[in-house]
Length: 100
Image (tube, rainbow, N blue to C red; front, side, top):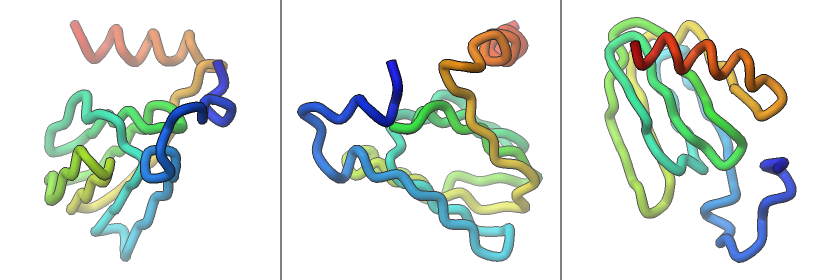
């Protein structure tokens, strides 16, 4: 199923997804469905557009609004990457490393 087509019976706040990065230190993400895991170097977030991996240094969860789907992360951001359905083998590799 394509994330772009799956908009039936979903409110606008749940389908909007944006990533706002300010000076590589403050990251605000909307459209977050769930925070799967996090530590001071990596966050795994399920968004309406797929899984988003945030990597960095001294990462801290500053704000989590589950109702609105907004997450704010503070720290030095090195990488943002999405894992889609098309990259299932990559996702399986990532998840197998994550849950060892």
